[in-house]
Length: 242
Image (tube, rainbow, N blue to C red; front, side, top):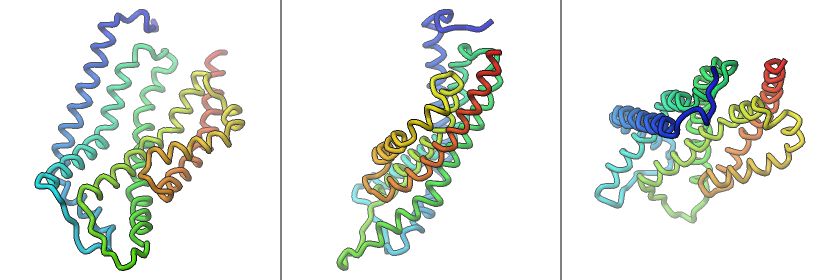
């Protein structure tokens, strides 16, 4: 028998949400602690992108420690994504129809794949290009003196948003499955959606046009893929209603 929101007591729902949050935080802490031992290797990879910079500095006594802590936490979060998604599914599982129960299991690997694809694209494609682009300006003989914190913040602020917005096809698929969106609606709203993508890219990326364009281009491609997925979702929804 299917369960609706009104069938589940509020205290039970809140307990499920609380447990999911605590479990997710636990995953991030544990995996982040393991990632701490690899922060030097990750920093070495980031430093290798700055070929024209002689060295890096930190301006506060505790800066090096907290930068590594932030980097370990970000890595712990990225590694925890499948486990966090499993906790999310456990919260909404009672409200999933029996027909879509098996589909919800496919949600976890598919969403994880999209997340890691976006992260990989950002770290190995966009980030090196962005670094070369900004350091390639002629600064009238001024030598760059980069802080450790600024390098890590720039990398995280570019990589994690890209990984998150790569979930666009999945979001559109489920909205189409629920009947909220359709492939026709997405085609008709294409020019407005592209404008929205540009605005979202401007908000999520560091304050520079290059990073915004590099995020907007794959999102436009993902939007076109989403139109096809919406068509597939519509056909699945129509077959269920027969």
